[in-house]
Length: 93
Image (tube, rainbow, N blue to C red):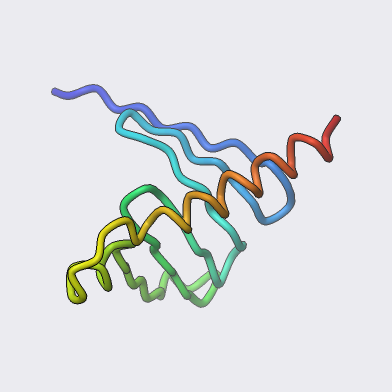
């Protein structure tokens, strides 16, 4: 049986930092609509709270790069995430 590790830390209302064995991600939103961004892509989940009904879509960061032959499509996403983290740290101090 394999070991699993997962930790979620609330940074601000509606913003969570998710830490796992294979990496980390940021989640924005609350019940009903959540956007989760990690180094590989973005997952958007829309649901009806309390019903168990939801729909989830996944978009890799480099999906457009593979179609056009360009590389580095996910760099902007992580730059934005890093800027948000810096702003949160500065606001907390």
